[in-house]
Image 1 (tube, rainbow, N blue to C red):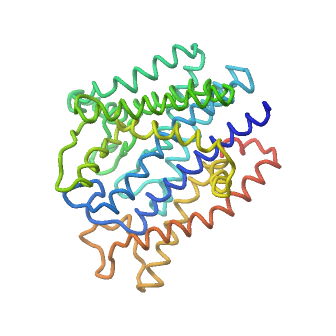
Image 2 (image 1 turned 180 degrees about the vertical axis):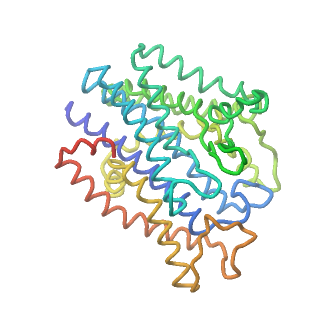
Amino acid sequence: MIKKEQRERIYSLDIMRGLVIILMALDHVRDFWSVESFSPLDLTQTYPEYFFTRWITHFCAPVFVFLAGTSAFLYHHKIKDTKALSKFLLVRGLWLIFIEIMVVNSSWALGFFWSEWGFTLQVIWALGIGMIVMAGLVYFSDKVILIIGLLILFGHNLLNPVVPEDLGSFGWIWKMLHERGWQSLNEQGDWGVYFAYPIIPWIGVMAVGYVFGHIMLFEKQKRTRWLLRLSIAAIVLFIVLRFTNWYGDTTDWQSQKTGLFTLMSFINTQKYPPSLLYLLMTLGPSFLLLILFEKRSTKIFEILRVFGRVPFFFYVLHFIFIHLTSLVYFKLVHGQWFDLVSTQSKNWPAFYEPSLLRLYLAWLGTIVCFYFICKWYDRYKSTHQHWWLKYL
């Protein structure tokens, strides 16, 4: 019975990771295959299908970072060696930052890690920093880690009035910590780094996810009750805080021209940095999904689990895949090499027209191809003992 419950617990986490990683791919496929000249979240210009194509991917980063903390806790429970866990988190964190700068940026630019203007630090960078911080936090009690994590999650929006300009020459630190932005790294001011994922809130997400690991060790009935309570509490708190426009986000929701657009305004919360409401909105329903994923085994769950067992492998490789295939598509169909990411909308060729159908077909094709690639790699990883496998 214990082995069965352990298997169900681990399977549910794998399935959840698989779901969010393929949803994350949807947003990246959009970047390379079909974007509009406006933000999908701009309610003055967007349309519902485009809005929700972007909005559904909001669940990815919070769940991924949260479960990274949970995985660290379960690994600690397995090895029962805090020093070894700390070393693992430190090394993996540094490795993730290296991959973000050298590999992910190269995949976006199809060249060296830098572009003509610099490079970007995104979610893998935030994960890496979070793990480095957790390498130190794991020496504290889980109660202290939880308090720190909750204080960050619920309190970081109090820092919103602070802007980089308030810190003068140290403003770049605030861009890295809490307000995303571009920072020059040369005297000319034309080359630098773009901090896309400010790290303070994500550290809190990972810390709370770490302590959440305790719940995943409960027996199934107790675990289900806790997951249900957390989900209801997060969703209700989100609705109350959002409805009152009292606290937790930088932009108030407003009544729109239709009920659907009003709903879109209500759930259009801030991701950079992730506001309290953004985190409640995404993590709350995710707890319910964990309950669902434990209920019974289905074919679709098994497919998701393939991706969830090697999510980092999928993440690193899918950028270069969707970038190259998009170039080939535009060449074959329109007779011209066209890089949608590097071309500003005002310079788009006349043949280019955004297409949600093209976006979803490209996404589906990517998922199908990577299903077999990830299945092979998971099999290889489980039958080989190379030291580097635990870092990819």
